[in-house]
Length: 73
Image 1 (cartoon, rainbow, N blue to C red):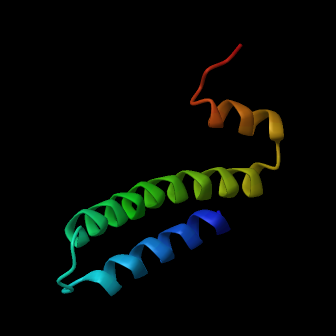
Image 2 (image 1 turned 180 degrees about the vertical axis):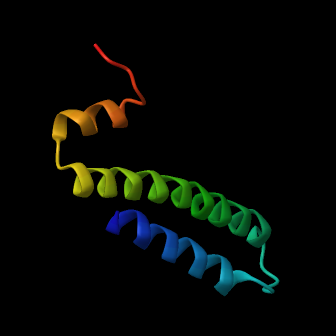
C-alpha cells in the first residue's frame, strides 16, 4: 500500500509540475501520469479493503477467498 501511495504522489506531482508548460510531449505525459494516478487509486482502494478485512477478521483462509473474489477451489 505504501508503494502504491508513493506512485500516486509522484504521478500527481509530475502532472502538477508539467501543467501549463510549453514543451513537446507534455500533454501526453500529463495524460499518462493521470492514468497512472487513477489506476493506482483503484489499486489502493482494493489493497485497503484487503488490509481492513484481515485486521477485522484475522483469518488468512477467509482473506484468500476475498482476494480471489469468491473463487473457491
